[in-house]
Amino acid sequence: MMNRLSKAGLFAALSVAAMGCVSLAQAPASPALSGCENNHKVLVPKNPRMGANANILPGQVIVQLRLTLDENTRVKVVEYPRSSKDVDSYNSTIIIQRGQEQKEYALGRLIQPGSGLRLVEIASFCTSPDSGTVFLAFETPSIGATEGFAVIQYSAATVDVKVLPMADQGRIVVSKAEPDKVELWSATGSASVIDCDACNKHYAVQDCKIGEHGVMCKRHPGAGEVRSPSKVIGARIEVR
Image 1 (cartoon, rainbow, N blue to C red):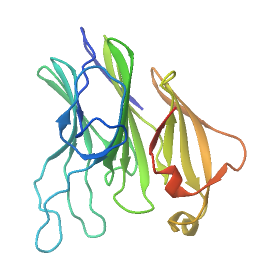
Image 2 (cartoon, one colour):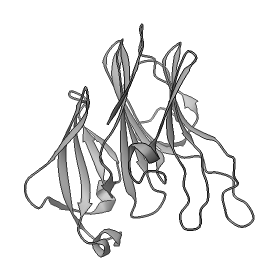
Image 3 (tube, helix red, strand yellow):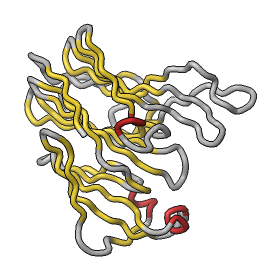
Image 4 (cartoon, rainbow, N blue to C red):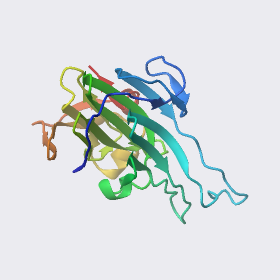
């Protein structure tokens, strides 16, 4: 899926909301880092305020990430958390602001079901001084989680937002040399197997190509690989 926001004169200035500069160091989301750099960060989402009944207090807006693409274009990942009867929704939304124009891409509409996902990891690569790719990993806030992945591609002319298929206790594997080619790993099996957090699982692997008009994925032949989910989701974005 792809949504395009055209613009002129884009230079690559990237500001990631994370504290510290150590690769894969966990940090609360807060604005830092500027300039076009290859970055890989694990983020600890800011949690919403809770009421006396242990429900999320309504009306909160939580900014989990800020990206600066040029002096006129900003990208944010914002949560609008809500408590429901069974499962809380965080309603993570990618917001692109260019001048007076703003476009919003809610994960709940881009990925089904995506309303419970929270931002947990980011990796970015510059392919030239004015273009690059940003990978965003989202996860349900529970053990035995489900992952969703969004991709922002930017150049001198455009900003594109695309998503990959959902994954169970999965990850993506990306290459600095070819950021438009992604491996998507997802656990397979019955619900009892998926829900067993400590059990080794068969992982199906898909080769995904991030193209101009969307993302195309094709599964590897065979039963897949057997892995411990703790080793797979230790890095939801593996960079090679």
